[in-house]
Length: 135
Image (tube, rainbow, N blue to C red; front, side):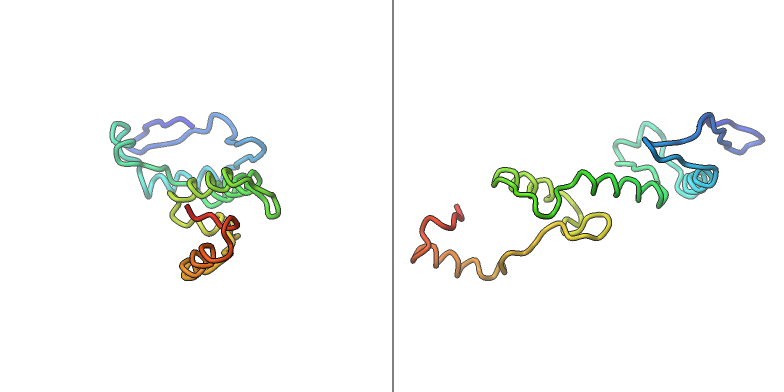
């Protein structure tokens, strides 16, 4: 898209069909994006990074990204080594809602109540030495 000025109004001209891999966007998608940009204009280019500016995205684009994210995600039943599990947990720390994927599917499974940890620690000390590692 290219921006042009005409009679004091910003205009967009489409120079090619917008697409992302196999997803093509049509005229209605372009109109929707233009409306979003009109409602939420970006700050000047020099300030975008400092303000943490994220361009508006229409629902169809969000759905496309969510679908791609889920396709490359760890699937139920996939065995992970402890170091892989740790890495995934560290990646989830910075997320606003780490317990669900963008589609709403759960991303983790609770194996124990966190309130039971002192009980488990005591069990480790008494009879499960070597089975549980909390260090």
